[in-house]
Length: 385
Image 1 (cartoon, rainbow, N blue to C red):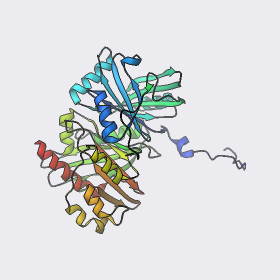
Image 2 (cartoon, helix red, strand yellow):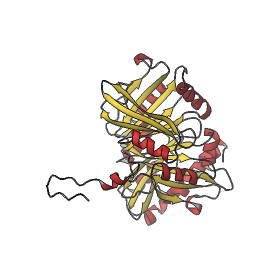
Image 3 (cartoon, rainbow, N blue to C red):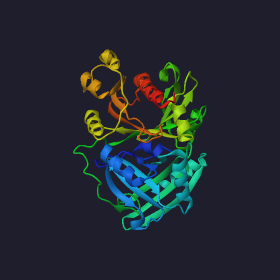
Image 4 (spheres, rainbow, N blue to C red):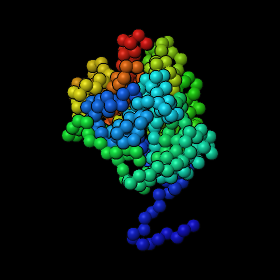
């Protein structure tokens, strides 16, 4: 055992991180395959208040794809479309959009050591897609590797300790497409939710437990997460620091088609259902985004009539919550405010959540019934309930 230093400048080791078999720094990027990256970049810039920071395309040597990198605080989206598929990567992206529509192909995770992370994951059962390799430019070196997860989704493992460019080698800095709002609409990615087929939730939870050393945070089953007509089951896995959180949903048998069933049908299999974005001011975020054209799910006024009785006092008055249709949930650690967008493409697949946390590390269990009933109303309009 090492001796304990009495030097006042001594820094205590991060024993939790040292003991973590698969340490992570956080989410690196959510990577989308889309039909038209230029238009998608404009949408997320204008509607979500994101800032274009980097670009890769024919003008700087990428003859096959065009990619736009947008950020908001620590959150990073990469939007990629195929110009002319000539390699396996281009063909994969083109076929992905054709089969699934616009959707998430990669939940990239920043790690301190990509080689070690990849080796650990593969040793513990992950299917390797890309073995570790280096990319370099005048801004330094990154190490990248990739493993497969549910559906056609992958996790690229990104080690960017020795890199200070705008995104990755091959990308150049880009000017914003529009002037970002004075105040950020969100600051970080809170969690990313995956939908998997009936009976496969536990399989994928076990995958994250074994392959990445993630632990189980929450579990929602039975009446926790059901309405009169539809039901689902969900478990949440996270790394030891709770910087990366992945809820995994599967459908459950019910009278009618659940939101998970609808997603699986229209997406064509398992994939990322929604991305939760952490905001410090959900009121300002919703007002700004709604004014820019983002459509949010509606919540009946009756939800707010008794809200104070069970949710208690929050920093936002009930009348403001009612006006903006923001939901509240409280647990033993505090409370959270949340709201969900409608799908952001024509297929009823990917959508977003805005979440403001005040102590609570939950996922809105108290809102499940109200949320699912709101989704069911939209499903009924689409003829998919």
